[in-house]
Length: 139
Image (tube, rainbow, N blue to C red; front, top):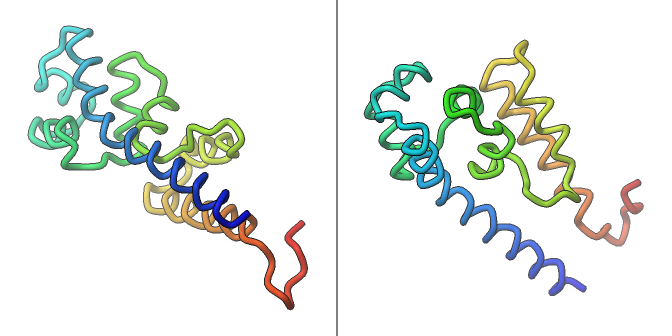
């Protein structure tokens, strides 16, 4: 059973890594489809031209707020960008709605959002672990 879980975890990790790698390519495709230059999109999003270029080349990972602005400017789903960036899990079995709610909350700073997402992910990981000999099963 442990091998099954590690294989599933490996597959999920691989899918998330692939999606992170494809974020920049996807953004570039969407930008070109919208017939926007890098400079035009950067101006609409409120980031620098070099920063946006680094995101497209996969050198930088944008914050959830920048992803929201990119989604608005490119008229694509913010959730899709979150999945491609590895912020939200693509697996429908995961509780993505909690992650999306955290990311959409305008009353939180980016740092607070990332902290909450980290705590939430750690709880999910803890619940996936088999209980130890002196621990009751998670409920």
